Image (cartoon, rainbow, N blue to C red):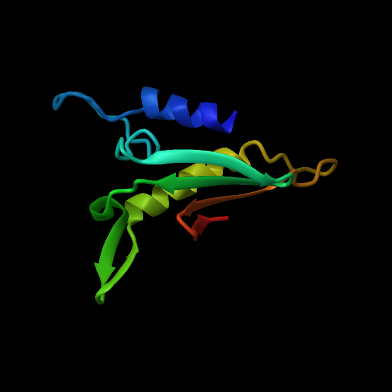
Amino acid sequence: MIREDIVLARTVFATNAAVSDLAVVDPIGSAPTEILFDVNTPFGSEIVITLSSVPEEWGWVKECGISVVSPALQTLADELAAVVNSYNHTGSDIAQRFFGRVRVGSDTLAW
């Protein structure tokens, strides 16, 4: 279901509005089209979304000569984490069902 939510956001909320139109800004739909999303369950209690093919100029910025995650990439990771956590029901009678994380390569951006 998480894969389907990502596909839906990528198609419905993609930023392709005309200049005179009001554009809907959605971190998933507005992300560069070359980014690939892989949803995997390596263990029974973990869901991992791995991003690949992230454009260097979009995903990272230089701070003091060091590449750090850009605000746009971090916002995308946070939004994906929110999608994963929307399926992770908690409450007085239901504990957390799984652990989720969003990563680029081996770097975890959201847990």
